[in-house]
Amino acid sequence: MKKSSLKEKRYQGQALAIILIILIVGVILALALYSRNVKNKYRTVDEKRSREAAQEVDAIIGVLQSSSRIALISNVETRFPVGSACWNTDEGCCVSGESDVTQILNVEDVDLSSLALSPDDSPSTLMEVCFQYVNDFSTGFTIHEGSSFAINLFGESKNCELDFSFTGNPIVVHQVYAQKDASGKLLSFREYTPNDTQSLEGDFFGLCVDSSACGSRWIDMNEFSFSCDEIGGYVPYELRFIASPGPTIMTINASNDCVQDLALRVTPKSTSSGNFKGSYFDIPLRDSSPSLFDYVLYNNGGELLYDD
Image (tube, rainbow, N blue to C red):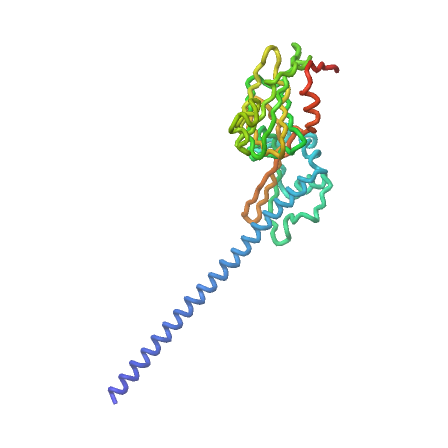
């Protein structure tokens, strides 16, 4: 009887231990599942906020890039004069807060229903749009065939230096020089010379590896540097770039001594529950013009007299 009683107690103890182990494992699994569900919930919310911030930035860019508003945006200083409070930042003129950003967009007659600004369940969303004049196109922009891109250099410092690089198709560079009086007024243009034009073939097609294929006027390179030095009493007036025979992507880097308004950089930003998203696009401030003008202007000799 004693042996049977001991066995029963031992079996009961083992059963209790097994039950306790099962309970402990169950509690651990339950806590793990609960923790995972909580993390997944926060991760889902975090991803949602991040997606909302990105959507807001994309929506703002889509609105501001429309052709009907580019001209208004380019004259941002008419509504925000340089020296006003919004310009007190290294990023140019920055307008923060949903109400102010909405006001800017309303000025541009924007359909606000297309923008997911600050959804009801995300009151912490912070919007900001910055405008900054820049003197470089480090990301590149396209010069289409049949048009040219002009950079006016008249009145720039002799220390002005510009570096250009090209990808895509060959490009023709015209250098225009002019004479000015003591007050800086334009007097006349210098007569065209063959050295005023450079044709850059680069490594685009390999056409000019053999110089006989293109002639001496084509240079096998995809970079171009220019300094605003005076030549024979004439100073640089303008650089004109013509894409031929197809579109060319050009990047520009200018020294701090020149061309401070090549582009207006627009940078929308959004922060939703700690998730920051930002992007930018550049609005060129030096408009392109039909290349027919270049052929008429530069393929004939003689001076172009200035008449005001």
